[in-house]
Image (cartoon, rainbow, N blue to C red):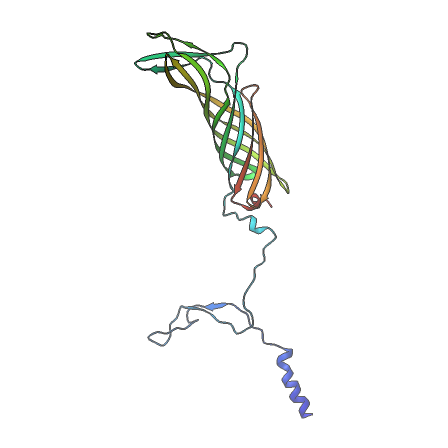
Length: 272
């Protein structure tokens, strides 16, 4: 009987183990450290005698992609092709050969407006708004691959007549602001947008006067207003590849199309 009582006493701690809560405890008088009086108050200490070695906080699936402290910014770069009406009609310019200066004007074909074709590089920054809306600023820079032909007419003459002008290519810059709406799918997204701004085109000419060759140019400005659609695919949680096409809403017979890569500050745009 005595042996049974001793065995029961030994099993009590196993049947009812001592539970210790891990954590940091401190406050006034809650810790000690060396000091003039052999201890100090107000210091926090973490002490635990249990087997607990740490804590784990489990979030919902995909919570790493929706950090609202980071705004959704997208930076995109790519290449686009544009075709638009030439801006040369009724433009005037001047060219200097030695001590003589000549003025000229450009006249487009009367039956139809010539079209310019350009290839541009594009850089764009977008900010995501609420309810799928977004706003963007875009700059496109490139050259004319084919300039719409127009006739030139000299408005002045010199000692040896007038120079001969030959139209060449040129370059252009588009500065645009965009507002749009975007929807997502599992693989990517679709969007529609309106873009508006200004276009500056510099048309180049080669002037020949006797044995003198001189370059001259005419710069023209025009408003831009486009309706576009966009589609993109996720290549990684922060990288997309997409295509965009559009047309002018103020000019007939014009179009644009391009390819781009986008970098996002939120994984999957924060929408998964």
